Image 1: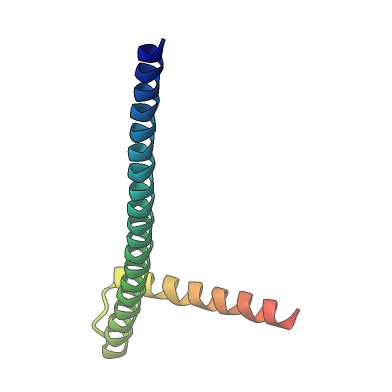
Image 2: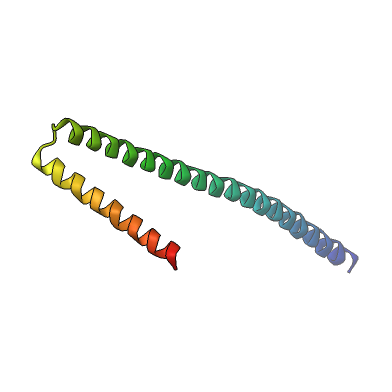
Length: 99
């Protein structure tokens, strides 16, 4: 019986070591996941900022074209739609502020 007890004890120790390794690996993966999640969030914010900048520059370009009279019919219609959308958005904001 002492040999069986030693064998069982060795098996338990081996299982315990493996469990500790899995726990360490799990913790490391959780940390890596947190870092990657943060990077995804940062990249999303960067993309959002760049999209806003692009929209702003496109609007400036449209305004410059409109003021110089060098806008073709399709550009003029698109510009008017964007201006009308901005006006609607402003009206919504004003309505919300007045409530």
